[in-house]
Image (cartoon, rainbow, N blue to C red; front, side):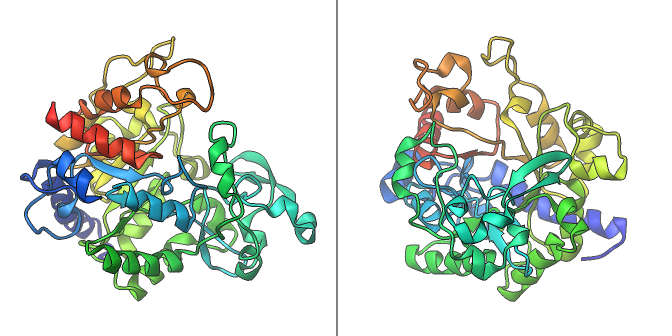
Length: 391
């Protein structure tokens, strides 16, 4: 891709048109299990369209796979998400090893997502680091070689909310990004339809300081497997806008800027002294700037519908319409079925592992015009979409 600003905007506009077609496209069949496909009837960007034009809208994105049912960022979780009808699988959150490989973990600290604490040979690797300004104690991927990480097994990250997932503790190893790209091709052949993935660069500023830059490694692997084009079934995302800008120079994939709470600052902004917050990025001016190098945003759901003081949903913001005006799609995060993660009016009882009325919450969010949503429960999302489109 070109390095000059004009060329960036030209290429970006072309790629945004691809996603825009998915937003406003004609009727088509939903990707997923046959029964769910018939029920959902979601819009697609055209008959036989390529790339993101082929995805249903609203798009159901399996958050770290099917992490409501299996330990996250494992092939067990990824494959189940596809089985449950997810249109896209977030495979995965990318962090590097000591020897420069990219692996899929929620965070570089792996004490909460692997059995590393049960490995006495790695006891001396436990340490405290400052990760994006926060003191964090545990074991970190950048202190392990890939071979060492492959001796570990994944465990459930939030057992208090998902005790049933602990049944699968120890069953799957940590996947590499290269393995995910191969798995994507295998699943595409097996299922007879294109499988989409949605990897994220995690803490890119932190890793660049360690000499483990993420973007170049991601781009190298995408080029190796021929997945670096504008119609690629690989959507790239990051909470750091400069990481997306770097990727915009390296590959032609669809790009998405993730957005946390309105009062937060992306860590690359903190490091560079940029005083802007997320609130500045979601103004019409900020969204126009993002549209110059990305094709979408991934806001927290609270930026779509803020919560009242009692935890119930308030009045929707103008973010959806404002983003659409500049050609950006919106894939907010994260819908989960359990009570603690739902708006107060959709909870049923107080049990931390009990399901609330997630269908009601999905309906409220879909009604805002979002283009898709990340969910830990892809099957619930697919059925909720069918209900919404039928209503």
